Image 1 (cartoon, one colour):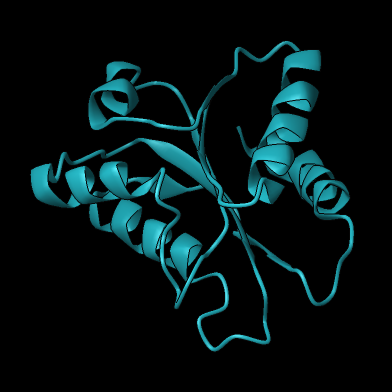
Image 2 (cartoon, helix red, strand yellow):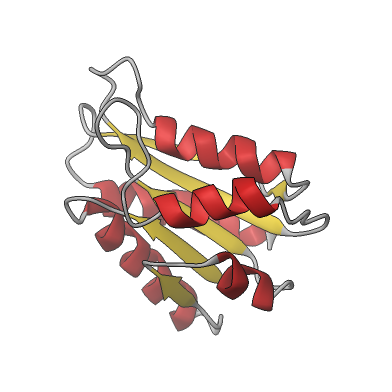
Length: 145
C-alpha cells in the first residue's frame, strides 16, 4: 500500500501515520510518501493507493502534492484496475470544504482507477480527533482490500 500525503499544518500527516501504523500492525507493507512523483506511484502498479490530504487556501491542494497532481494531469497515465481510497480533511465553514481530496478523487477516476468504498471527509468543525475518525473508517475500508 502507498499512502500519498498532502499536508500543510501536519494534521493529514498525523492521520496518514496512524493509518500506516495500523496497517503495518496487520502485516501490510505500507509506504508513506510526502513528496510523491508519478514515477514512484507508477513503479508499484499493484500497490493500493490511499490519498490522505488536507485542503488549503481556497480549496487548493497542499504544496507538497501539487507536483504529483500536475504531473498526473499532464502525463495522464491511465490506471485501470488500480485501487485507491481517500481521506480528505477540511473545514466545512469554508465553501471549498475538502476540495483537494475531491480534486484527487475526480482525477484518479478520470485515470480509470477504482475507488474502494466511500471516501472519508473529516470536518475540523465536527471532530477534534481526526486520527480516531480515520482509524474507525480504516477498520471497515481495509476489508475491501
